[in-house]
Length: 272
Length: 203
Image: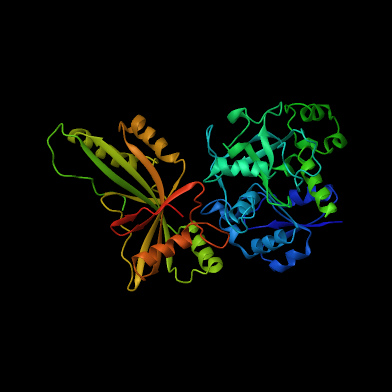
């Protein structure tokens, strides 16, 4: 069984539910405090930096955490091909640490900037994501079908993937399969504007990976949609229909859409 | 702090157009935990043993234009907005000053140099929103407003160019092990030395 460390940084608040979903898909998950010796991390097959507000988002979301020795150990894991996943605040940490998109090792090539468009500010709601047609096989997409639409919640104020040379970088990232997931509407259309792209993210990016597909950053929270009982009844087909049809505890405990990303993580790690 | 200096400008005849560039600076009354965390990260993780202190302010730069009576009324209302509302500062936890002229960083210690790093989000959503509030709630029409964060770094006095370069290296994030205070992918920045604003936005 693959071993996954779920990092608990000062301000993380999703580590236990993230570890719970990892266990549900057959991974051996352990919550790993940032105060432990960084080298202990290297014994794991993968590391997940979960959601939350590391260091209270002081200076910028993820900025201070990205400088921690434990994140240097995460970079070492990435360098040897081990799995590294950042969810929401974890995604912000990986981008600030230069691990995603990682086309120039160590360089910070992007930002997760404050949400733009719409009302801006902190946004907490359900959105839909789907794999980019050119998405490479990765820890987030290894088990996904090409046109799979996955509803899951976002909860962030700084989720806008952006870069100084945005359009040019976007072209390169799409071409090379780094863009894993995009925000889409109910029909899978990624170009429906602010109704589907909740933060003005460049190219509607919801998840990006580094070279090799083993390092990825995703802004929505798959761990908050990994059981059917977490899915809103008013959610569109097919997940909303399944949720409405679930009448008893056992049915509600069935897997939700977010679990598909953790199944990808397991599939990717098992193939390594 | 709390009251402010007034942008006077020279007396001019009524009807003659004037412009005033005002700066409303806001700082926490108590300890600034973000600045403390940033200082610790810079020292402990990025090797900035030479950084003696780091402070942070919010700087609202407000440009007002009009003839003398319009300007006088606008200045009065701007002070009222700062004093009587929460638009710029919460008096329970923050203090403010209203000033004009060159941006002052304070007095450096012997052998030390203060370097400012002005940081602005791109796009700046707060500045235009503040301008709209000034127009609708305080009848200050046509003000141009931008919101910056000013970091002040206390560095060894190794000469202006060297100090500016050191502030840029510590401040501007280009790599995991380099820079903390600005992410240039969505923020503009300027190095500020006393009396000189060195427009050094290119990394």
